[in-house]
Image (cartoon, rainbow, N blue to C red):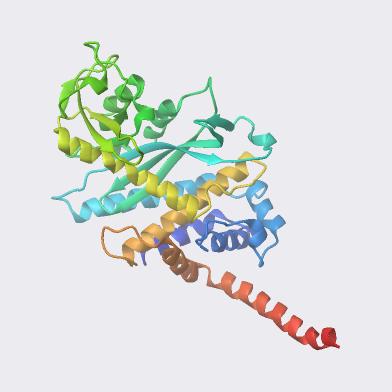
Length: 370
């Protein structure tokens, strides 16, 4: 890892060796320019410096090392966490692990992706279980798994698999890491698996979930009650909030193995929404769901590069903030800054091609007017 320069620059230059051939590196730079456009539409047909077919070959057929790319991103994420803890040894921020499922809606036929494309909660497409790490100001996409439909490992089982990818060094320390998840991960198997790894848990829960005494969650009258849900070996603290988004108020429950008190647990349960902000950004700005590749390798590479663009921009913002501390940045401005910093030659070539086309049109215009 290059020790000099900003973290985003170090990450960028450590990624470049993943593309050993000149044409692969050029295709990577062109696609990164599309990603950092920030519009969420990094479509190969929008490229001018390279042909769309060359970008497609880069994803589906080119022999570059996808695993090495993922390894480099994880190494930089791990280093960022360790650097933060080294700078704050007496007030080490707690590591929070967020898991959730996001759906990438797709229409049309994807024959090679047949076992990936399913309908889940009314959405037809590919469904990813994502692990996202938060610690202080750090927001780090870590790993994902594809849900392959009924009869295969459930999203909760995939989430437990993702937890096994977290290095033991991140789970050690005096402040126990905490996992946040929504009600889709409330199964006894998942909760036992999380607690068995030495993590605390804050998880959403259905209002109809039964307790050992025969009551349901919605029968509880005091926030912060300690109860034992049916099927669990642990006593859990339960709280709730009321949402007033519709005509009828909606009660949302959350439970934890920690005795945190009703008000604090309700407030803590909202921290799960940070992963929703990540999904919104990586889809809306970096085109996570815009893939149209015909091979699984191409789709996986698309997702990895989309996450890499988010990570580059996030590290850039930590080193040179474009907004006040603690606020969600303007990802369009941030992507533009990274774009002009790392792939300026692609921008120059694209603009020169446009100028050449404009000059050719202007020179031909008098002949067209006669």
